[in-house]
Amino acid sequence: MRKSVWLTALSMAVLFFAGCSATALAAGIPDMDSVRGEKVFVDMGCIQCHELNGRGGKIGPNLLRVLDRAFTPAELASTMWNHAPGMWAKGTERNVTVGRLTVNDAADLLAMLYASRFFEKAGDAARGKELFTEKACAKCHGITTPVNPKAKPLSLWQGLSDPVALVSANWNHSSDMWDEVQRKNFKWPTLNSQEMTDLLVYIRTSSAAARAEKPKFHILAGETGASLFTSRGCATCHDPSKIAAKESTLTSIAASMWNHASFLHNKPPRFEGDEMRSVLGYYWAGQFFGVNGSAVRGKKVFEAKRCTECHAGAGPGPKLAEQAGTFNPIRMVSVIWSHGPQMKNMMEQKNIPWPTFKAGEMADMLAFLNEQKTN
Image: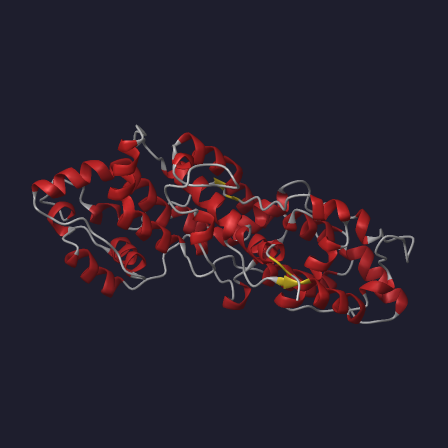
């Protein structure tokens, strides 16, 4: 079967653009932009050791191949902690200075990494072709020639290389589609996440121009999405802090939006430019980059790694309890790169081994740090 990673991006895209709740933003998740992240990757010297989109060094692993569907931001932060001393040593050999990575830079960098690699199950164009007929899409949409004069053939659709742009276009035209469904007297077709993935892969492969163009997966998340979420009426029905687990990917969000578009009939709010991208980022990023660990286990991790010797109030490091509620994987990536070498020197003076984290331990420790109480 023919598979594509493009559509896996679509499921992530609607979600990646759909998540930053006000609570999450208050907890220190900043605006993020995957395009800016590419510049950070180059400016910080990462590209000298790590390959990105066919460019860069091969000393370190290709990060886009390391990340998989189960690789959470907390796992990425723990991986950086585990390998940081080795990365600094390699940087010294190549005269690459460890620079300061701000929280905003770290957010952009993580957005870039996930935009480039974090995909869900691949779609299949053959299944999508079958669904195109089964779901009655073919009653209005031709491949290269019109079937309905009101509906462009697939080969002329815009935004086929950008899953979010395609979702936005479909949403904006849903009222016209609803009118045609009513006129032709058939039911609004519903789709699950995998069906949406397969259909979008088929739609993309139907256009020679789209096949020749590199897919785009541009992530935005921040306060703009929060205001749009309210102004476009989304908040009337949806609480961004309570996204169902089944709607945790872009295509699942896209499918959900498609399925309930018929309830809005001819009054769906329109999204122009990057507005859909911003709204979806707001709806998603807060949960994805937030903390989902056990504070009880995290306390044990914090103590076992001997973090208390520097960060409990008596040591040279800041008292982390005073910053409870502000910790997330983005901040930890910033900390390790900006302050890690200094921390390593202090730890060596105290004969404390560099901490490494097993799967889940970073998320647990962040949960603990966020629940600490100051004395």
